[in-house]
Image 1: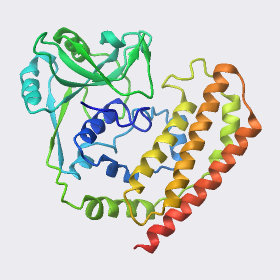
Image 2 (image 1 turned 60 degrees about the vertical axis):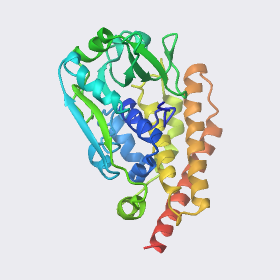
Image 3 (image 1 turned 120 degrees about the horizontal axis):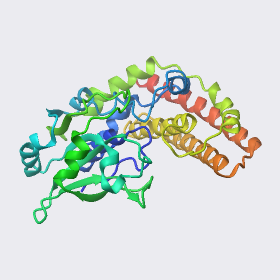
Image 4 (image 1 turned 180 degrees about the horizontal axis):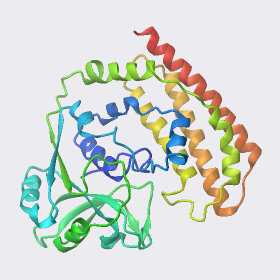
Length: 331
């Protein structure tokens, strides 16, 4: 059973979260892949506001084939334009107790039809096997309860017949310019040669982390602008993915949270530094709540929010400085 790694899809889109959730369920330390998750706030902001990038879909650097290869996991792709052309190969994948990931049109999934309000939207699903009694496919996906996406909850298992999966997979539609490595018609499955005795952290990921940190320059002044951005924000539907400010804060949360999970693997990183990153994540989650509350009720305590953003800025400056000194001492 695949359990969801990041319940709120923070920093991970549907495909990346499914990939990492599956590998995590198999006991692979996928938190090592977040050695480079710590990002400059200004760069995240510019990518969303100036480049018009949907950062919920921009995760080439997480769980791509090259990164997974570092954990001795091979990414296989089956290219096909029609679902019926790959059904035999899927049966072989299921016999090995593996899963397959497919891109398609989320609107065509019956359990999800109104989630995007009749918009055709690129979505990824996990096929886990076939019900021998009905011949239907087991699909592992998010919870869509009464046509509403339930964030913060684990995956559940649906059953879909072949005609439904074909409709989801086969139909071409304009899904926009997404920063995804895979073709829409590439079915993904993984072959793991992960070796629990191999020192992946020491020999592979720590040197990459050290190099990343040595070139990283951080500027947290943007945090002081967040209160005015929230005060001036006008969002009709604040929980939709295409809201830029909500997306910006959510990506910040995921970036810090996942980076902290990597830091917890490193003995040289003090518990005080970990505690700072945990507090930083808490501040950001509270700030996001203020944004959502303001746009749902019109209420905002601007003075309290400014104080929270000042605390966030001070703590993250301290955490970044402490982190750099800790790594420098151990070089």
